[in-house]
Amino acid sequence: MGNMSVESFKAFADLGSPDFRSASFARRDNQTGKVRPLTLDLIHADLAELTVTLNGSVPEEIQNHFLTAKHLALYSWFVYRFTMPAQLQAFASIEYALRERFKELALPAPVNLRGQLEFATAHNFLTNQGFRDWPGHLSPADRTNRTWLETWIARIPATVSYFRNELAHGSFLLYQQHDFVLRFAADAINQLYPN
Image (cartoon, rainbow, N blue to C red):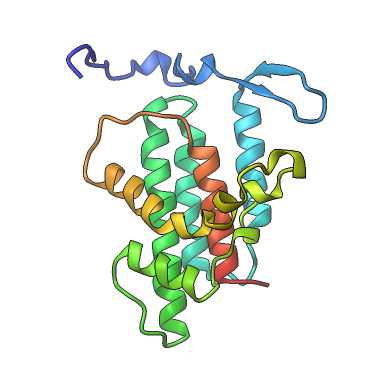
């Protein structure tokens, strides 16, 4: 960490300019195979799709909570460091949805995120197939490790709570995973509140 330099507060004249880190990424189109620079309109389109895919049965307060994560992810184009609060907010939205759903169903679920996720996976509120990024959705040729695929859901409680805690308790981590994390959060919330 000794080599990390202190960043500057963004100048007023530069507020509408992308963060140089955000503008340095590219995106491969899965249909055409073409690679193009990542742009604000691509980020917006991805996040707008999450709006469409969040079930109408999800309570409004949870939808609005998740909307904050999407806005932070969108504005990370201008301030790259917003990727981390966007991910933290997405994880918090999962926890909020878990807590509310279990309360609605009068289930004796644990109070911490890891325990809630363990309860949700053990009772099939969350399943492998409900996550669009589950590796089992890959073509059969890509499914080489059967055991890993079958235990993917069992790894979620520890993995999600680890990353949420890293973000919540302060960390030097800075990585652009908000697209995956927000998709994961939307899929988890949708499984808790199916149409």
